[in-house]
Image (cartoon, rainbow, N blue to C red; front, side, top):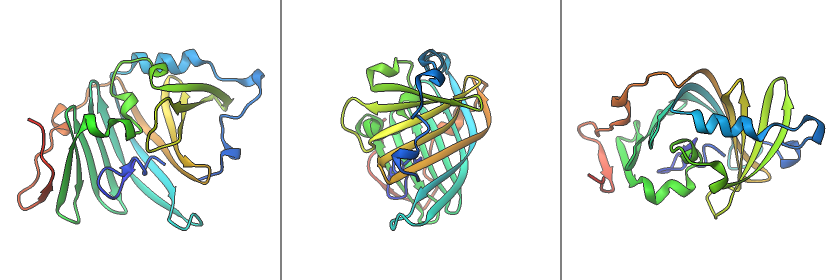
Length: 217
């Protein structure tokens, strides 16, 4: 869901198929209900899940695959952990966003407010109507999964998002950088509105780690 360069893997990481294959394309008879997406956003307090992410490599002819886990709590707290193939953590405590590259012994920190617009999951972190940030097109319903296309109203790192909702839970998110460069994230073992540990959103750089940037107090 972010970038391998600081902040990118959750940005470019949440970025495999052409737009023509988009699950949002549908006939009016099987169109998803906008109320289902709005209800998910309005009722969300916490979310945690394992994920599998796929995205094109630089050649666009091969796919990179990553796995890990994700946890968030409103307002503003997020943990996105890549376990394989390369360990990396992205942590938001509500004020700062940390990107910790374990193998490099390096952590980069930036103010959340400065990167929020390019953060594909920032819309999950606050209880505000999606329509304030996105133009929304309800898409298809297939096998009980409803798809929605979200196009940012203001310029961002990504071109659009596609969000899949099933049984009131977010089960997939795709991020389009362009028609040929799309990152897919599939969630499983989802726990929604269940207690999460607040400590996981508090990052303290381990001893010996090189820190780039200055954290807000």
